[in-house]
Image (cartoon, rainbow, N blue to C red; front, side):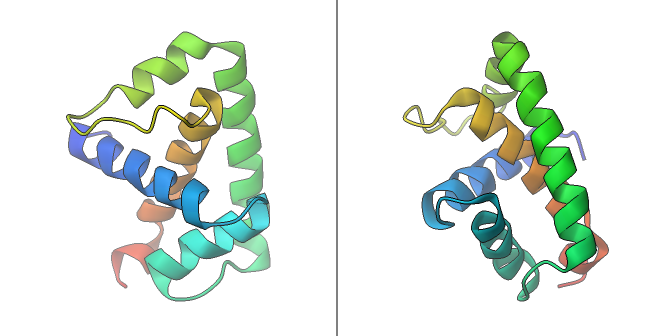
Length: 106
């Protein structure tokens, strides 16, 4: 799941989540889940993915070069108007959503 194409797909999904999902983590997560699984996230997935997202956001804020390196993966140009740490954190969150059983079997 760390294949370049999968990372790039996660980044593009993250861009869509940020662009279309509203302004809160909860609204963005529900939007992402509706796109990936055709249902909103349940309470367990909200808690787990919120912790993942927040931790990744902290990591990328503390190490901007790490965020930039992640966002360079793939051929498709990234959205430069989005904050790197935010986009990188959502890229990791999108990757986790893609890896859920319900996403793989949807």
